[in-house]
Structure formats: structure tokens, C-alpha cells
Image (cartoon, rainbow, N blue to C red; front, side, top):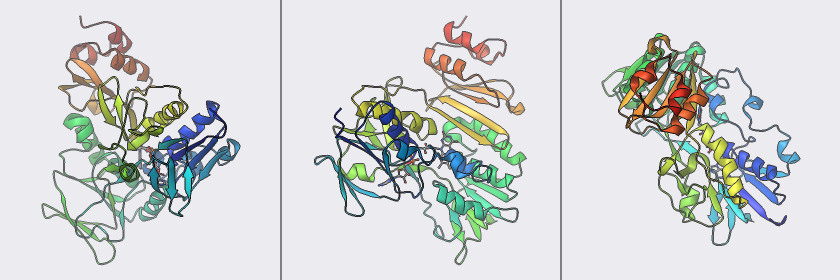
Length: 411
Ligand SMILES: Cc1cc2nc3c(=O)[nH]c(=O)nc-3n(C[C@H](O)[C@H](O)[C@H](O)COP(=O)(O)OP(=O)(O)OC[C@H]3O[C@@H](n4cnc5c(N)ncnc54)[C@H](O)[C@@H]3O)c2cc1C
């Protein structure tokens, strides 16, 4: 690869920063330009709803690299820089300043943005979304022992913010259309464990109900639910999902379908243009379909894979989907992919809050979540990769070694 080449990365967050790091680690000595519209250097978002929001971790602890890393590695990090256009024909991007930068390879890692609430009052002051460190700083100031926080949406962000707000002493209510938190990913049985967890921590739960309006003159004062309930609020946090930031890709004519469409090499429909992280809807060889993951681990690991492919070192992204969540003293890791399943099997008692849950599809483990049970990741990974038939009884039996289930079929 001639040293005169320019590799551009749009989106200076986890996927983009790990790609830039990998380009250098793989020996690329051309120009690496990392363009991001946020003012900070790249950082990880998981702490924003957890330790950072609670003031237990500072920005440096969340940063992907040390402040000096980008200079040391001769990575041109350009913060507060908005990319307004990509022209794959001319191989250049345009910035909001009008500046154009040509590229030999381009990585689009523009991530995702929170879905907005569209009920009356949604633009009142005191209505928060949580994506950036700036959002977290604003939200942090709105949460304290005298605040009344209403969380709309009991997905991961909503559930984690509710837990952190309770830990900060706020009064918290949670409103969710589904019957339990996290139902879309975890299903009703495991979702119910999270419902009970929040109830035990004093969260006022409103499930199976929507939001009609946010009330207040300039700042939000209350939330009116579709069943007529009115919840008093000094702050509202909206966590109703995210949408991939595909505007640039769409305008550039790249194939887009629930994210930027990429193959198993994270290559888009345009030659020399790659996508990674939350914005990429990537073909996963193990599942034989495209999956768009909104997980820290996908950004962490897809960035490097995209970088290797930018360098022509054909690399497939085929990792098992993985994410984690921490709420109160309940931590978990989830591995696998189970968009549909027949049964959930527990190893350990859910009420004890230390267990492994297995999602079974066609008699095989499609996904597993270890909650407050640690050091089982490798065995679970082996089980998922092996894809062997298993019986619920053996899965549930703590006497049966998980690693053994990965190598021996059902008796
Ligand atoms: C509060 C919070 C908590 C989370 N907790 C967890 C967790 O516990 N576990 C887990 O697995 N995952 C968690 N996640 C998800 C995880 O953080 C994301 O999957 C990850 O950040 C995706 O990284 P990314 O680099 O693909 O995109 P992003 O982090 O979204 O970064 C994309 C970057 O591109 C920039 N950008 C976009 N368009 C442009 C443009 N036109 N010009 C310039 N820059 C642009 C954006 O501003 C942003 O900086 C959490 C997310 C949030 C918000």
C-alpha cells in the first residue's frame, strides 16, 4: 500500500477509533483521517447510563484512547467536524465548511441516533435523550434526591437510567408499552425478572400503557399516560430506541436497508467504502442473514475488521453477538442471537438473581444470558458455536458441565 494513500473514517467513536488504531497496528503508513462531529475525542457510551451518569467515572475512564494517542499514531483526529456529503464516484467527502477531502478508502461509522418522541409537549425543556457525553452531562444535572424522573421506554437505556436515577436518590417512574421491560430482546420471562428488580428498588412501574402528552408551560411538569394517569415530572428521559445514521450513505447512493448494507467483509455496495458499528447491517455467515447490532462489542470488533479489509487483508466478521448491562447490583452478559425462540431454560433460580438463561430454537441454544454468574463466557461461546441439540433438563442441571454440552450430544 503506497504511503501516499488517504484512508478516511467518518464517525469518531468506538468503531471509527478502533479502525484507525488497527490501520496503524497493521502497518499502514499513509494518511489516516478520523472525522467526528462531537467535540470530544472518541469515547465509549456504556458508562453514560451507568458510572459516568452517577459521577463514579470521569471522561478519561470512558475514552477509547489516551489524549496523546492520536498524535503519537499520526492519526488526524478532527473533532467538531461535520461531514455533509460522500461522493463515491469522485472518492471524496465534503465537510460543512465546504472543504473536500479525497480518499482511497472510506469507512462510514456514523452510528445511531435516538428515536424522538412525537407526542404533544415532546419539545419542552427537561425532556432528555441519552446518546452523547454532552447529553449525559445535562441529564446528570437534572437528577438528584429531589427530582422526579419519568423514564419513557424500558429498553436498555431506559432501564439503566432508571436504575442510576434511583441510585442517585431520585423518585423514578417507568412507562412502557410492552408488558415487561426489555421484552423485545429477552421475551416475557426474563423481562419479568427486570420488572421485579425495578419494583424492588422502588420504581413506579406503568407497563402496557403509552404516553399521550408531556405537560408543562416551558419545562416539563408532568406526563399524561394513555390510561389517564398523570405522573409528576421534573425530568423526562426518552429511551425508545435508535435509528442508524444513514443519511450520508443514502445520499451517496449506497445500498441502505435498516442501516448501511454490508457483506461479511463490511464492504458496502460502493467499491472502497466500508461501514461498521451501529450503522452497519452486516451479513453474518453463521446466521446466513444480515444483522444490525447496536452493541458495544460489535463496534469494538467491527472497526478492526473493516480496517483490515480496507488494507486488502480479507477478513470476515463472524463473531457471536455479545452485550452486557448493569442495573443496581444485577449484572449480565448476553451472547447469541434469538430473534425467535421456543423456550427459555434456567440454570439456577431466577429469584436468586444469579442464574443462566438459555433461549432454545429448534432444540439448540440460540442465545444465553449469564446474570451475576461469571467466568462461564467461554463455555457458553463453545455451546453456541457447536450448535448441538441439547435437552432442557441437561441445560438446567448445574451438575452437567456446560463445556461438556458443547461436545456431547443429547443422551
Ligand atoms: C447511554 C448508552 C449506554 C450503552 N450501554 C451499552 C451497554 O451497556 N452494552 C452494550 O453492548 N452497548 C451499549 N450501548 C451501545 C453502544 O454504545 C453502541 O453500540 C456503540 O456506541 C456504537 O458505536 P459506533 O462507533 O458504531 O457508533 P456511535 O457510538 O454512535 O458513534 C458514531 C459517531 O459518528 C458521529 N457522526 C455521525 N454522523 C456524522 C457526520 N455526518 N459527520 C461527522 N460525525 C458524524 C456521531 O456523532 C458519533 O460520534 C450504549 C449506548 C448508549 C448511548
